[in-house]
Image (tube, rainbow, N blue to C red; front, side, top):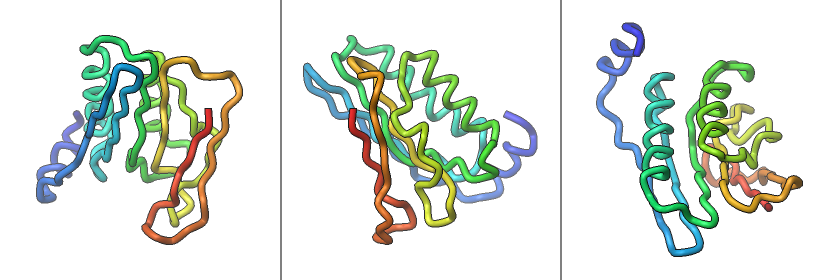
Length: 140
């Protein structure tokens, strides 16, 4: 982690974040909410979920979804680093084509899956202001 990122993370109060795992014999689902600040820290949090997934017996279908909090310019390197980590773990980003999942017109949320994923799948959001995030859906 860079010195600037460590300083930034120390300057703000600790944040409570979640990573929930629910599973059965046929399906494993992770729901995540990564930190708002700290690019390297977000990647470490995402990799912690991947490491947990890899440490368990394989499930026929695994879904990882949630708020990655990747604020910044659309071409930000952070998305590429998370996508690379997901790809290395055999995950498909079902929401790759989405351009915005937040009222600020940024893409902060994603859905990844590993298992029998058809080459053609789709994802969409609804323009509903029940939260600062738009609801995200994927069909695969």
